[in-house]
Amino acid sequence: MMRGMNVLIQVGLCLLALGALLGWVVMLRTAFPGMLAAAGVRSPRRVLQTHIDFIVMGVILIAVGLALPDLAGWNRALLIAGATVNPLLFVPLAFRESFSDGLTYRVVTVASFTTMSAGTVGAAVAGLSA
Image (cartoon, rainbow, N blue to C red):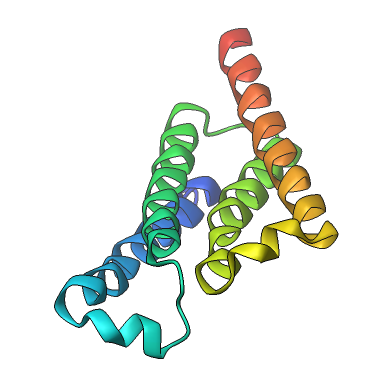
């Protein structure tokens, strides 16, 4: 009986695809310079950061899923949450950099980075203990 694909790999592939699709939005800055501004984007570099971060997070999830297919569910959940939220933190900043001054934004940022850090350290410990 064949098991389904590891959820880390599945989510990683989705994040990788999303990052690749965001490359089209990054391309708009060069090909159609006024289009992003017309959409309300004030800081196009944040779109580039989102694009890159989704790709990086996708690759991390795929790598961990391949290396540690039996990683504990709580650890997978931390990795998936952190890898999904971290890139999204750049999106509001693309429209208004001052969003980063808000308490809610800062709390979500700290929670997301804590989640991703705990997930990656947990995966490292699991891998080194195997």
